[in-house]
Image 1 (cartoon, rainbow, N blue to C red):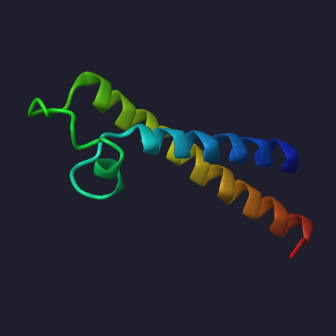
Image 2: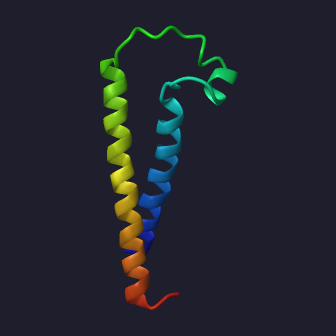
Length: 80
């Protein structure tokens, strides 16, 4: 069970990094340095952006839950 939870944590961590980097920059910062500020904003959030937000939140919830499960498993096993 610990190995499975660890694998889920690793996969969700990598997904979180990718999903956060896919978000459109809201102005300033590193996204402008790499050309993120050049794209024109059309005013509102598109369906793709909203779905990306939902996916990021969902992966974040799974990531958080896997951390809690690993903490409980390690506490139950007596490690640490």
